Image 1: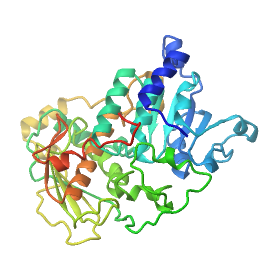
Image 2 (image 1 turned 90 degrees about the vertical axis):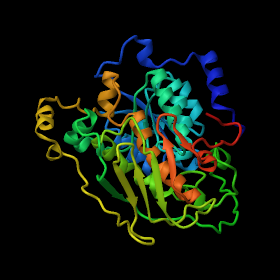
Image 3 (image 1 turned 135 degrees about the vertical axis):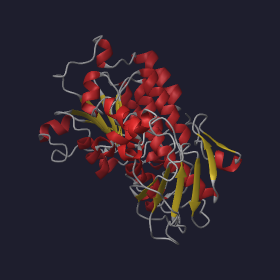
Image 4 (image 1 turned 90 degrees about the horizontal axis):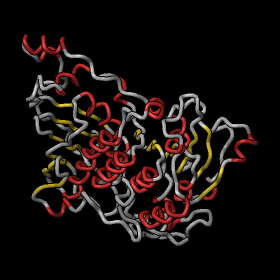
Length: 408
């Protein structure tokens, strides 16, 4: 199947079909009683989980998209539909067809991460609200592009992690309002599994049910092997970043909210790991991430080498860390506005709690951890310019090339 660039396709689609979302045609946000219509892109086991994780009230599934033809089916039980309704669900193999659907409100993206950014941007340009599985992106520059698209086209975005909804209000208020500016000595830690890719993949025939060229999309061409697709893809640099981005996204989500880091990223990442393989994700021990205010977050697995044993004064921030004047100011401050769910955001046209900027900043920390592991040294990052400083090799991993004709 011949592919075209996202920009060329969407320009042609807009000119020919005048794609406009339903809420724009009506001039106002859809009333709360309206049924939200959606499409699932990536119909593996996680895709069906993601569809439920949106927690929409009786969403109507209009279409399923997958490049594995065996998965282009709407299972009535999985989607809680009558068999006759499941038969009516459109089955497509190219996500770009979904962007032409005027009656489609939401896209639920559960593809491998190397596709996340391009599909998110296409959806934003077509006026579709977005629920995206974690990790948000494969590399840092993709995240900024998604943030810009969501903002420009006024759509709602929610990442598929929800730890931030569970608390952290006191520390958030203290740090966000500048009551405690020096966080040196505060060390948070988060654990993830250690799973690695194989370095001995011999080429195998592509199964007839899989459009492997479209599965690869923007990723570099590598001969097919079953370990490269369908979940195991996450252990190869071309498609994801191993469990650092897979489970690390869950660890960062509550942390960045509680410590008011939704608008910034670490300024340093120091790895403890053996030399990295250029294709497969390999072993590592821990990465120490440091923010400009001295706060540290250590991501670790406890399965390789020496465990992290650097001293920490404390791991939490609370009213006890303030002087009397600070505690008085804290008591007078209102709580931050409650984080709203994806469903509420769709109704109100406000951004969801796991919005694009927050999701981008959180996964940037894990991308930096992986970059430090891959180059084998401490790196320094400018969270405003979103560039690695003084290390050209490391900085090339911030904005990685895509296989033609795909590009940001």
